[in-house]
Length: 355
Image (cartoon, rainbow, N blue to C red; front, side):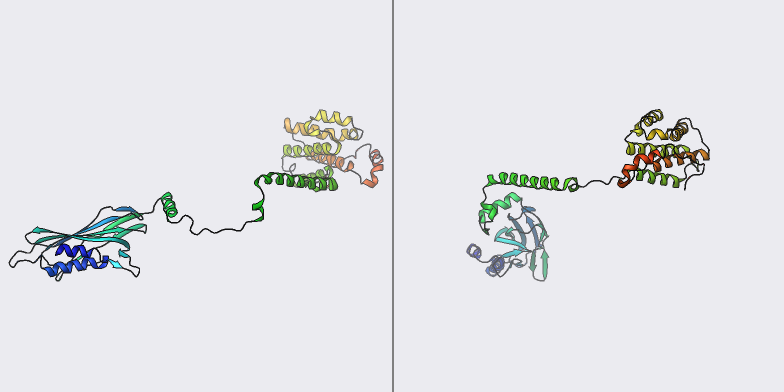
């Protein structure tokens, strides 16, 4: 009779199976306890075959109850939702079964087996499973299951097996989709040629103004600016003679280079004076600038310390030279020679520095 009931219960829902079996066993009286026999303790334990699973894999939970005859009832903890899905603490239950064994002396071993299949990653706690014996309630240990996410290749493979073409949407063709691929390179070459032709035409029409260029400060304006800055620093008055003459002669060399095309910045004092003697305009200022260059050499290399009046004369000599040789406006370009001729000798510098 018990085997017939067990066979029938497997066809029922997972939620009702355990309850039906327990009631049947209880009603049959197969496990009735004889009066006067000692009552052994009731125990319940829960074990899981695999404590770590990948989502979608299956394993068994086995709940073992040792009891005395027909005493006690296993509480059904399998829940069934509206769609017929059976779960144990959010883990789906695929199958349930119950096996009983008569151990003798009125002791019965009942094993409840749940085939579970998790679909959520993380750690799942299942249980405790509860057995009721009269007024006493006995709980099993909680079963812990760690659920891992599957590898990506496996997910892709499973999704393709389900329906590889599900959700495919056709996209309307765009105009450039109809252009043969081998046309791309000729079209790109034509665009480059056209762009180059436009740039060439604009450059030829507008000249160098098409390209950005850095504004160049005229030599005269640069020299005046640097002289003004040098004067404001008061280097000579504060005893920085070497720095003062280094800056003063660099202004002079840069102006000669930019204004007259003589590479004075790469020349020694002797070479500068020789180059000035070869120029009609520059040779007029040898007597005034020669002492400035020589004094600067003594200060830089012989550590000579000129007096204040010498420093002022050197500054005024360079300032007069820059002012006298400044470029004339274009309207007065024809009178340039006359302007220089009227200054055959540079002005005699005073010991008072110009303000």
